[in-house]
Length: 431
Image 1 (cartoon, rainbow, N blue to C red):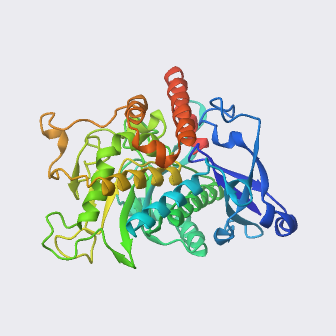
Image 2: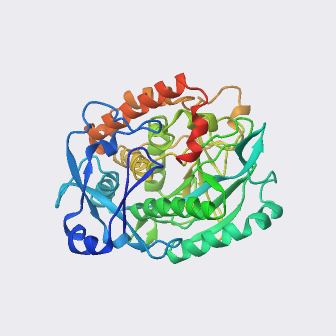
């Protein structure tokens, strides 16, 4: 039995492997021990970051049995998500899953709303080749966006992934070759926040494991080739009440196709997005991806189906004319801890609802063409951290200690990668 938790070092899923007898006899009730340093590790070292989370102290990792699944690529094993507790019944304040669960409860209790999310996962598929006399990882192919040639070449890999995800009851809405060399995308169905984050973790595990079985390497690194487009993990957000999507306007008379609560929630996310970036774009490499004219959203604005805006409203097939079903946050990438990333979006949306933040006008053109009218989003992790440091809104909702740990780890990432310019290339083996 694999008992997994998602550490603050977002894309790395930590696992304890436990014989099934012991799991059933002991671990179901009492969990397993886990050092507190699990929430103090960066992308580049196992040495704990900061002063509060060290080798001193232990928590309990308890299984959430509702997430238990057979491992589809190794069917003699099972996997299950874990929650972090100080002791059974007392949640640990650093636990990412509990943080998202707690904030979802606040949204429900204050506004009778539920936030749902659906992820689009982009990744690079790499193969081994000899390059400059050395064995190296190179793109699987060099075909173009939505190429049938790319799909045909990778079809056995895709079929194995979809079979695995079907066995996990994870909905795949579509898949295709993306714009970069060796890049592909899976779009997952939307569901409740906690389930969406769990399914994203399981999907990442499936993609990487199936790639290994095919002699390939899949990586979610945001920007591997600096002369090509990067990989994101775009997330689509909607609001629900009594089984109905209430982000969408009740009729076509709405100015932007959204309800008042939908507009206020999204306005909060837009207002706070510079401070959200350290959660959803957590490494310096993330900002190599967020550049103008790359469909990533580099300017502080929003638009209707405008993929050059960091937030765009979407009207997928089946939605009425002039209505909006969800909005997409394009800055989210595959290095982010999905629980904390969704928690930061939820925090900002809550602030929008509480303070009735108003949306500015949407942008219907590429903002980079508009003579510097729009401010750039933070262009580095350092700038994003500065925005977060100057924003007190997250402290009470995320929790002061967890927020301090996140900031300390981000600062360590900035320091490391500023001194080791090529170190990002090794992230393909970690993410």
